Structure formats: structure tokens, C-alpha cells
Length: 142
Image 1: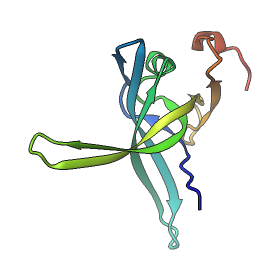
Image 2: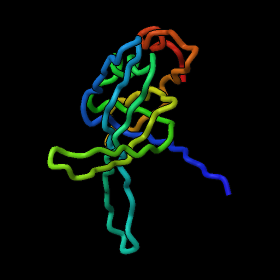
Image 3: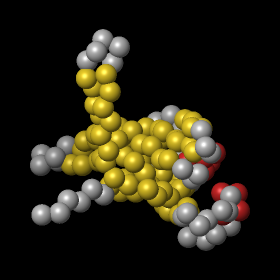
Image 4: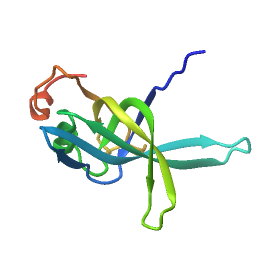
């Protein structure tokens, strides 16, 4: 049986993305996103839970995320799960699962003038071939 490792998430950045330049013109951006889930229990009680996910993206497009997104901005990420392992300063082995981003899409917040919670809608998919700046994309209707 073959394996399958694909993740698609929509959420909001918990903090500003951190960009690091790593030799030979390579970059990595890391950020944490919050994904909210709203549901109603069998008894009719409305509940909400939040899951926090660490994400990273390598390559030239990492700078796009760092340049155009900030804390609380919505984003759609597509990628795969990756396990990171390390030892802390006390020699204990630690690990965590994160999303290694392969593609992403900027989302924009709807105007919060109504009484419902603001939702996100697709704004612009950034592909490997796209070199347009976000400011150039504001006039594209969706």
C-alpha cells in the first residue's frame, strides 16, 4: 500500500513570519497559524476549539510570505507533514510535527461591518511562475 501525505489548511498567522537567509541565496520562512473549528454538540451547545500549527517554507517564495503577511492575516497553505527532531539543552529528545509548505494562497478578510464573524475568501494564488507584487493584484476581481 502506498503512502499519502498532503495537507491543506486555512487559518490566521499567530505572529509575524520570521524569514532567515541561509547561504547560497536560500531562504526559509517560519510561522505559526491558528485554525479555528466551530461546532455544535449533540445537546445544542456551541463550542469553538483552536489548533496551532507550525509551518515553514523554503526557497525564493519564502520571502513573499514574509513581505506581505503579518500577525492575524489569513492564509491557505498546501503541503505535507514533516517531523522535526532535536535534543534540548538537558539532552532530552524532542520532536514536533509541522507543515512543510509547497504552495500557498493569500486570503483577504471580508469587511467586518455585519454582525457575523469575518470570513476569509481567496485573494490571489501565488505560483512559482508569478512575480507580481501583492499591490498589483488588488484590482483582480474574485
